[in-house]
Amino acid sequence: MSFRSRIKNIALTLPRFLGQGTASFLIKTGYLIRGSKTYVSSQGEKMKGGYYDRYKLYNFVAADQNLENAEILFLEFGVFQGDSIFHWLTINKNKQSFFWGFDTFVGLPEDWGRDKKGCYTNNGELPYTEDIRCGFKKGLFSDTLPGFDLSPYKGLKKIIHLDADLYSSTLFVLAELRNNINKDDIIILDDYFSPAKMDHEFKALEDFIKAYPMRFETVAKTNSQIVIKVI
Ligand SMILES: C[S@@+](CC[C@H](N)C(=O)[O-])C[C@H]1O[C@@H](n2cnc3c(N)ncnc32)[C@H](O)[C@@H]1O
View 1 (tube, helix red, strand yellow):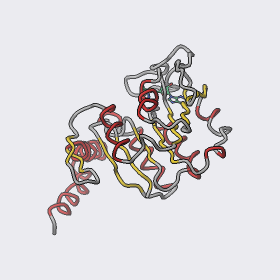
View 2 (cartoon, protein in one colour):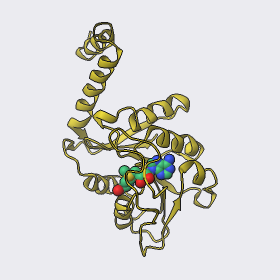
View 3 (spheres, rainbow, N blue to C red):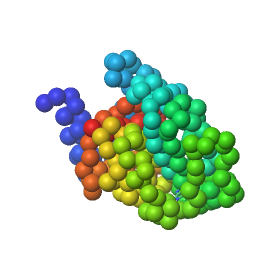
View 4 (cartoon, protein in one colour):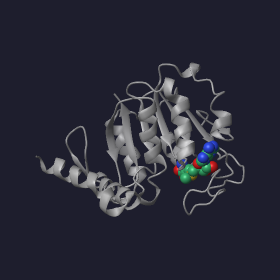
């Protein structure tokens, strides 16, 4: 029996000794430690993962996946003041690209651990940019996304940035977009490896894949974000 299988077997017997909650916490923590150590890029280079620098990650992904000059549709769920979507506007130089940011702009609709309902509010204001490729949809995803017409963007490679923190918000977006998630599309989950918050983005992706089987490969990760590509 391989070392990996032995560890897996031990992990599977843990609930009997520790109780389901503690065992689940330890297993997830082990996964986090493993997931955050290193990342091997498609070129075989090792990238250290123990830091939190999502902007370096975005730059790496854009270069690695040839996104800097590609015509893309960038969809962001969870905009707040626009830091991440504005960074992607600087990365992607193609004038035919589109960027849409979805948010209530009055903060989280539910508590997210210690971050309470209303956290990350932009006081109802849309972030300001002069880049005409970028627009915003204000409201709950459940109000704005179902009526959002994706047909004008058919055939464009999508970058979907999921940064809404919450399980319900993340799962809703994935399920709503499921018929428009195509091969080679990129999905970024901002708080995937978040030890205290594994029941949110991490679980949302797990449950989405269970309900709507889809295959992904990992493009990159840090100790918080994961970037996956549909295969
Ligand atoms: C962590 S902030 C986003 C941070 C942002 N991407 C940045 O780079 O600074 C999370 C955002 O998700 C939004 N959000 C969460 N659930 C939502 C929902 N169901 N509908 C609309 N907005 C939601 C909140 O309003 C909040 O602004």
